[in-house]
Image (tube, rainbow, N blue to C red):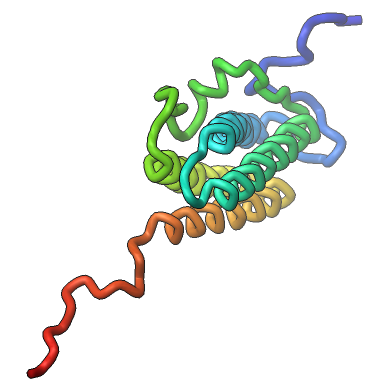
Amino acid sequence: MNEGKPRQGFSGSQANPIGCDPSALKPVIQALNEALASHFTLYHQYLKHHWLVRGPQWRELHALLADYYGQAQLYGDDLAERIVMLGGMPEFHPGRHVEMSAFPFETDPVIPVRTMLSNDRTAEMLVCQQLRRSVQTALRVHDYGTEHMLKNILRHAEQRADDLDHLLADESLEARNPVPRAA
């Protein structure tokens, strides 16, 4: 018995119950671990913003950010379970998550709400790009289950990015250059 020792390295793979070639899955497992790292980094960033948000719309933003960190945690769990299903080992070290994430973790202790949301939008955009690359990696080895899962996660990341973009938009009903009235 191999108690206390990992089955394999974090980017490695072993036999899996779904009939995929373990050696072909190494790049998929690596891509999934990178997406996992990004989702847990995103989770912590959203959680921080959830705790620190202030201002006239704090209640709505507080609830929205709770939904977003919940989604990041849920999809992180899905990614980790898929890695295990493929015969890999999920990366769970928080320091490695920050290193492997598609975006840098925000280190400023307190920042304006608009900056928080802008940083979240940028993080989501980078996660979307990472997920698209991961979909292509899965397709190259005909791992359609991973492809399907990643596309679902991507769809939700795109929706969050779009929602954040709308929140950051200028007021659309205000006239930028008022038209002078005729006398």
